[in-house]
Length: 358
Image (cartoon, rainbow, N blue to C red; front, side):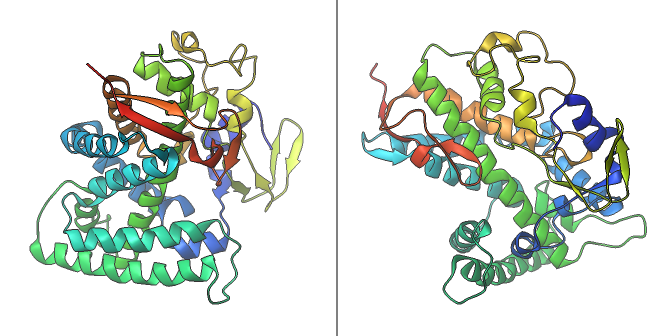
């Protein structure tokens, strides 16, 4: 376990080739072995460039009206004065934004089938991986097979139309490597599911914390700093899993080949040496840029989140509508945390929302 900025940089940036991403096989089976975050080297770089290219600032700028529409629809549905599970609602919004970035406009029947089966996969992803019929993991495996069929139909239909769009699916369909080889349908499907997964829980978790922090102090209106400080305080991705591919020496310590290596982002983000009074929500700490490698909410190096600009855009749009249109009240405990597996306020932050009176 590595809790210093220098060690994190060593593993994730300067000597990243000595450490490979590592995940349980049970999780690889659900998202698909070709998903980019299970890989390193040429294939990883190819897929990363495709994802980054489809989520570049120039392209996601065109998504702003559509994301705004999703945010308006979501906030309107909350403003009934009834108690809602904030995290659950944020997950629904993030899933819609993810689908938009991946597919652009998608027929309604595909949307419903994707959502229904992906929800089952999501429920089983962090369950005990037993394949006994009826268990969440077994249900997730079956839903994963159905998702592959659905995605295969979408891929086939899009390929027949020969449309050159700029969403992620079109980028993957039109991609050729230096040998002129295209991606297989399995590679495309695995990476679509990987991006959907990456786009949902983490972003939804941060937005749930933003709702809590704004509730605790309604005067926090500097949106960018609120987002940055929420990312630091909550540290949704607490650490990264890596595995040494050879024996590695770091500052006199031997990391044997095959050992797991975990840069601890939470420890770094909450170290008073880098962030004074780290348990305090303080926007002033972002008036100057943090020291290098002390603030890594989206990871670092070649495996840093390629969709971070889309996530930040979604947070900004949502926060705008929260503070300009709604008022809310958190119900129950405001301090307890649950892990599912990402940290969120207890029970998903139950809250009541209303439209602000003029």
